[in-house]
Image (tube, rainbow, N blue to C red; front, side):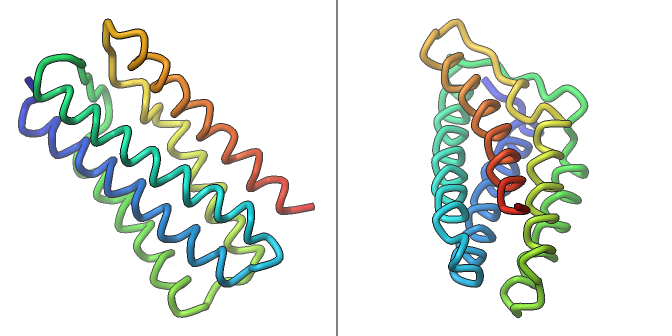
Length: 150
C-alpha cells in the first residue's frame, strides 16, 4: 500500500510525462522537419505515463514497492513548474529549434540524473522489465534529441 506522499509523487511523475508529451507534440508541429523524432518522443512519454499509472495501481494493491529516495513532492513540483514555463513559451511559439533541443535535453537528462524510474521494485519479472525499459527509453530520448543537433 502506498503512503499518501508516495501517491502524490507518482501522480506528479505521471503529470510530468504527460506534460513532456504535450511539449514534444508542440515541437512536432513547430519543427516539422524534425517532426518524426518529436512525435516518437511524445508517443513514448504517453506510454511512460500509462506505465506509471499501472505502477500506481499495483502499488495500491501492494504488488509493487515504491521507495521515493531523495525525490520529494516539492522537487517534483519545481520540475513541473519549470516544464510548464517551457511549455508556455512553446505554446506562444517563442522557442527556436535550438532552444527546443536544449530544453528537451535538459529535461530528459534530469530524469536520468534523479533516477526517476529506479524507485520502483517488484517481484514480477514483467514489471522489472518495464522499469528497465523506462530507463533505457529515457536514455534513448537523450540520444534522439542529440541527433537533432546535427
